[in-house]
Length: 315
Image (cartoon, rainbow, N blue to C red; front, side, top):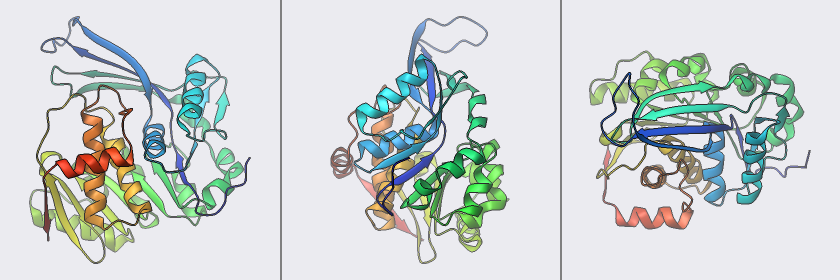
């Protein structure tokens, strides 16, 4: 294991997948064969966030697990090619994690199947072996796909943790751990699960944000689709919106948004500017056929932001 100078890198802990994605040429017909397009790419929430960060110019070390197979080799070779440090990834004799998704005719998610049993190998023993990388990170990004180690991580390491809740069904795993996270990124449904507050109005949204801050979270971000992004800190709250764009693919947009937030925190941007940057990164993902837009960079995102009209409402 290489020495890790304090605060020189972002540590991401999470899965590395092979993504198989299909979409129909015409309206999606359930229970029938649909002529369309099927493609295979690299994925996994943790890996996607880490790749976006590396492409944004942030030194990133990914603690993950891959199989000793052709898919695992592809993941590791790709990481080396883009400058993402996966030298400490665990390689095991199991199939590399695979995620199958079917999009509808608008390229939005219709259904997904996740074969992620290999993630169980990301256990406490593996985490302990790489404590130096975690302890010396500027931020450590985690998600709720981690089956057993999430609580161990946030209760044993003194580093600012950033949580991506991934889905409402998985967000419940982090409900009792809220006070251990520096930053949380959720959508409205996930925020409802974490807070126990039904969000129907702006007051509900504010109540939810205040609940997270009262639990000890420093930055809370709730994505709301076309309604924008609601943010809360101890000192301020607001909503940032922008004009919608024609979507090419929704896959990877949330991971790009999360990476954009991390970038904004690393660059010590004002919170509303960090949100704008994250929205710009997400928009680049939406406009790409690939899960990770190969053209994403900090300069490309900043350029996109300049070309978009944002509305910022302080609450």
